[in-house]
Length: 103
Image (cartoon, rainbow, N blue to C red):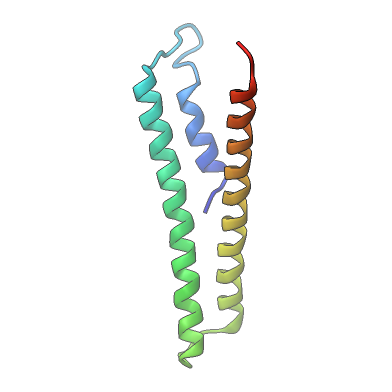
């Protein structure tokens, strides 16, 4: 699930280490940090999709699970997937805009 904590945890890449001293990182360190945040977020979305699938499967098989639990799991998975797709679209749009810039 993509949430504010995931986004704010990525902000350490650009934040100063202290008020007087600015933390500098190499491009490869920033890339690794960004990649790890991105991978963690995608894994959370995948976990919610799997939980939703398992809950739906239990309901279909007649196991003891409430319908509202299945619907909540399904909606969580749907909302996080939609948010992920919107973030992806914005990133692609920003990349395309950057590529159109003249230097």
